[in-house]
Length: 292
Image 1: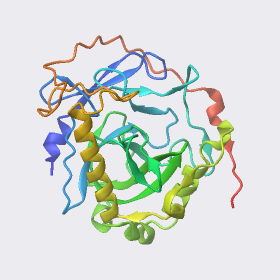
Image 2: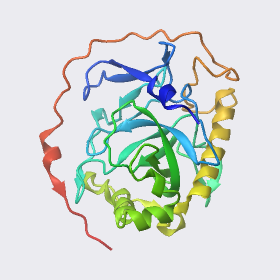
Image 3: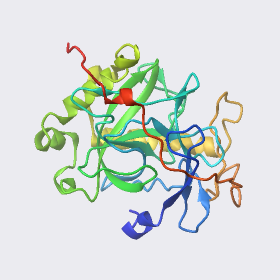
């Protein structure tokens, strides 16, 4: 397990202005170097305690669709775009923006060449993780979370696991050790979260999302196996075994000795950061979706 002091020693460097196309948030390592959120944050999976590292991409109750870039050297967190426009998530009742802290598990990869489940291949991203604690996190935060279970989302025909976890420092962390504990201690949360994942694209004119296992949450042991498998696929990626893959993620890093593309430093041009741009006014609207 990573020590709390080590976790706190990760920070970030902002380049450009939030909610503008030039925005990038880079990882700053304890050494002071710029690193990759994707590759240079240790997985730190403890199978006994079921704890793992998490990178916050999106704080709960916010709207910007931020993610670790697979294409840009250094893998900064950027705002996703669609047809040239920055993406924002609309309010789907009863939630405002994202219902939970949302992010990624570093040093994992959902392999788009590998049939992982039900003839589904991975979505070419790090594993997604939803952190259900009370405290609102911030973009670029590196934290340690306890794995509680997972939900298999099918997004555009690809497998997109959502690992359910809680911050190890959350007041409920000692009571939550598996998905059944969430059902008992936080009644209604998992059903509401699944409903949100099903419906959140409807305001943009898209159909509902589907799930593996009929929408059943799998337990913590299953989730840990998913993490292990995706870490192993990442291990192949970082060694350079997928260089010929179309849209293969950038694997440059400064800490992974087994990597085919380890560098001594990133040559990053940090742009001036101005005051955050206000989110579009239409994001004040709440959308209501019919229930099955």
